[in-house]
Image 1 (cartoon, rainbow, N blue to C red):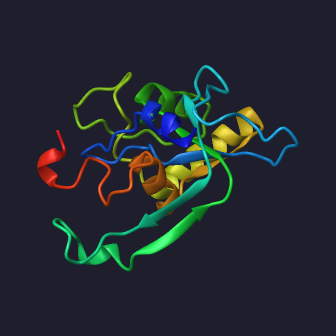
Image 2: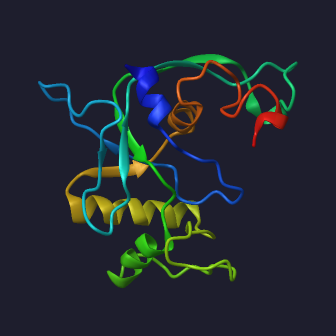
Image 3: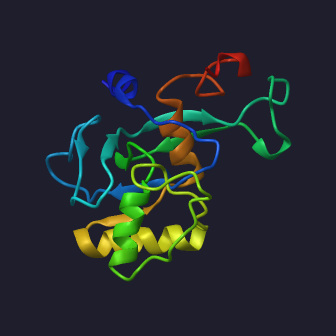
Length: 173
């Protein structure tokens, strides 16, 4: 079940990290909540979310692996105890601009890359928190930024390797 979900997951790692890293926290429910792979959008200006199953993975990479960074730290097993929802796509300028129009978010420069459906860029962590707070207010659900472990778990898409794209940097594209 988890593997089928992860095959559907189409998260991308952009060159400039836009606001991909946010989640909806589900309250525990008797029916177990939405099934992994379920997509939803809480409002017209809200991002499309996808339910990620709980599970376990090995975070980090061995120092001997190609492309290992010193900052990757110790290899450890991480348990994601409950399902959560993550943004299926990067937050777009259209979505960010809705928060600006509501008077909650600051305008950010697109660096002449374009706005509209393009991923929002030049957003600080503090601005991202304001955005998730705004989503929580307008939907009545708890939005927040993903933890590093949640992001890596979703980005790996259930694959048991140290890089989501494959074993070597050449397999990236």
